[in-house]
Length: 280
Ligand code: SF4
Image 1: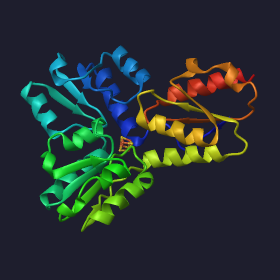
Image 2 (image 1 turned 180 degrees about the vertical axis):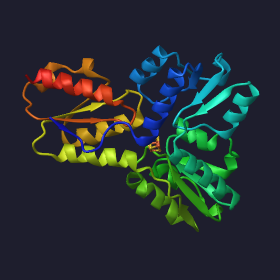
Image 3 (image 1 turned 90 degrees about the vertical axis):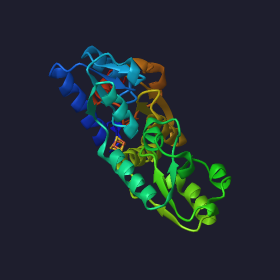
Image 4 (image 1 turned 120 degrees about the horizontal axis):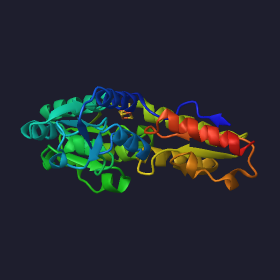
């Protein structure tokens, strides 16, 4: 078996997970707004510690609201305070960097472009409170080409942290061809990129027969890792050891293993142990 050189929890998620567990261990009573990470096992584990996951602030009966590593719009903090809630904020430092840099860019008169998924909580965090006339969210060349960027004096581009900026280079270039001035926010998170590059190495490794990708089925970055692996090798996405099927490994001698940024270490270890037993 070969593990990818980089896989699993990024620093932001690791810190968020620790903060919530410390809070629960100290007897804190709280509810998380949206999954703390996109991993069902982590959600269940936190529920066992007494920390529920809720989808809206109004659903919180506990004294504390917990904001996940993805971050939230500033107005959510106001709303929580107005509801008399205490806030445990586990927003990743790199996400806050984008919040701060995008606010500065708006103040400096830039029109903002977020490269990402408009439904992703991180992107909602950046854009929810903004005047819709001051920003666009795009992710494809078609979208980039459909907008007359020459209307804006200056544009600033930010990437959703879970994206690999290199893969969206053509999208940004399509904007640049049509705009007077485009600045790029220097806010790329290398955690996702490193996991993806390590997955590419596994996919290209001639010794490896197939790859197991461990992660939540709702995790966008896990799905993306799976796509990368499938380009080079037969690959399976599993949420945990119980999803492994021994028939997958019948003609395979070397298995590659990687995991999405929202996958806790113990889930990866369980998968590795089960793989070792399957190959005995
Ligand atoms: S992927 Fe990067 S930005 Fe997102 S939580 Fe992890 S460390 Fe923070």
